[in-house]
Length: 157
Image 1 (cartoon, rainbow, N blue to C red):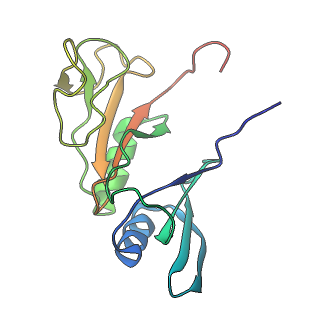
Image 2: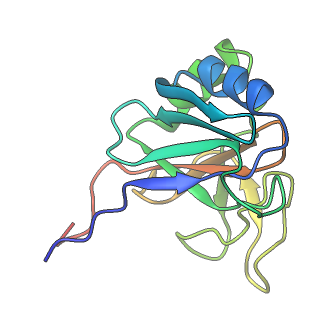
């Protein structure tokens, strides 16, 4: 049995503001449907992704901005940085982790989150290793995204 992650619900305070942000980000708008005064669903899919995000009114009781560590994978982190800044998205500088390949600091502005051995170092991973270079950004509510460069996946992926 295959279990495929299809959709992630994002907690937002203003669906119109979030919609404008994700359009500017370049995600594809799939649905914007208002069923009642208390229920609206806005559905976006990142370019090339099989997993989508939804938000709106009446979608979740989670605190707006509480979704953290949402990963987007790219093959060229420098190209992603240039594209996003060109779209007016405020992103971190490209960084790598001093203590290993998987950075635990998922919060966009946090440079030390994740415990001992976790520290952001400015620039690409020294060997440009897959899984080693990152950048972060947040949506207007503070939902935190991590972009990770993967040039070659680990075996079995």
